[in-house]
Image (cartoon, rainbow, N blue to C red; front, side):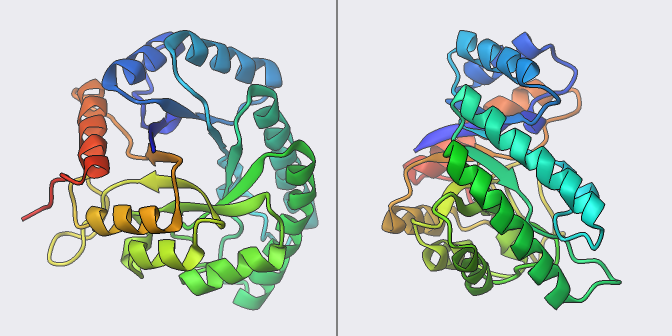
Length: 269
């Protein structure tokens, strides 16, 4: 497996060149890039990553929170779908094999059935573009009150029925309402495109996400499950590094991830 880090985890105040240099010094293999307005801008980021000796395996889109693919507005959904179509095409141009996507977001004025039906229709449309450019659209399990169990998530992917629509499994996100090792085994290696890693604190700790991978997340069980399903791709850290020690935190995350991959991770007392 390879060690990755999200673009949004890198201190925002650094220049692009300094961001990549820091990531390389910290010992990561690749960076998950943000989607940008133009192919030219993305190629510039790719060029800087190449100069630093870093891979760019995936892109992360963010519009799906503000204007979800499950929106009741056709105009809003169409705009978001076009953004993803562009991102899939951009990813293909720079050799990234995955674009992260949130398939839908529950709202208090929508029924679960309607959100499911609408999201499924939009993802099926995007599957055609993903298949054409041969880039995987990877659906992430997030706190969106949608696709809450591994069985439902796997079933949704099976309904889409495309080899280029898979899961972007987030270990920390799954801990609130399940067990990540069970999610991994239920989804199986054929349905998992990429994996996000971050810590999660559960009761009796204050529930939430710490600035560390050392947490209540069962890393040893996760690594065993990933090995069982044959996953051998990126483990990408998604923890925002900020504050006066932000740069040092990247070295911390990298070391913690190395310990997890080696089976010597730190467990909270």
